[in-house]
Image 1 (cartoon, rainbow, N blue to C red):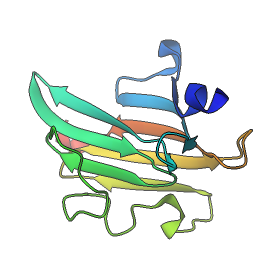
Image 2: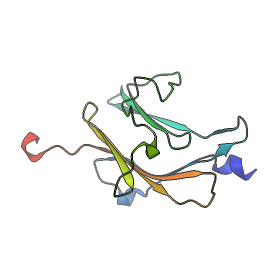
Image 3: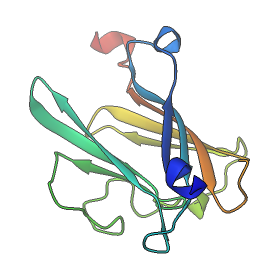
Image 4: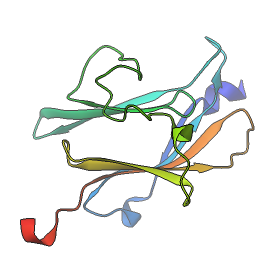
Length: 140
């Protein structure tokens, strides 16, 4: 089925377009998952020098989550450990520019998300950029 092919689609940006501060950049598509009547979700772990740094979750639907460290079990996005709370749904805050930015000084990262009109009306499509916070000139 076509749903299985697009259920967890993440398309990274070409390497030539990335900067040293960019940890990840691309599009995310969360579509209905026929196996459990839910929507697809993706979780990625990040480490620095072999030490767990954080994990980021995309989906289901318009939910996003960032947790410090890495955990083997799934953590609900409404858990107090979600550093994007209380507004972890994309639609929780409407901005003039049309996107969301979460800056997490504790981890030294920022997550930028823009909702896109997708080809499938039942899917949620986003442009995502995860990057290290730029250090101010005086801190370098």
